[in-house]
Length: 231
Image (cartoon, rainbow, N blue to C red):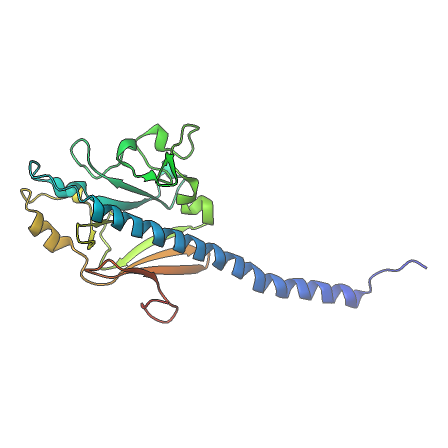
């Protein structure tokens, strides 16, 4: 006698699969969010580390502070629509705030790679180019499915998604390449230092996760689900 599934058994299987899909898939998405947040947290810490050990001070250059280490977030075509990020020090040219290849930090684990997930202005920084010198996991869209990245609270600046660190590790907002105060570093920092908690939010479909950067110390953590405090 040939065995077959009854209608009731099929219904039970379908219902079970539906239950599993509502529990397992969100966990997979949340895992991707957590992985992206942890990676970004570590790279922001690394940016701060670079600023502490190499603050770019130059007594012969009045605008030396524009060359500080920063992390910048973009969504350009060169980043496949992003969001993506790049860690660099604006040391060459006129310090406009735009990165070129030699300004981008090297991957400490592989000196043949630059710490960028795609950046405009140089074919070697275009993630779609066969000569791409960056790291695809820094492209949060391609690596983790992140669809949007938002800066809010005190680090939100219209038209600029980037954070600098000074020689004390303090976070600074905005685009230093646009600073125009006659080289008065102290005046510019007084205006642009992050003085309240900075929130960076990663969004993946209907889920999100945020990182919090503290003023003054630049301490960074992943926030809990209730308020803007660390887990």
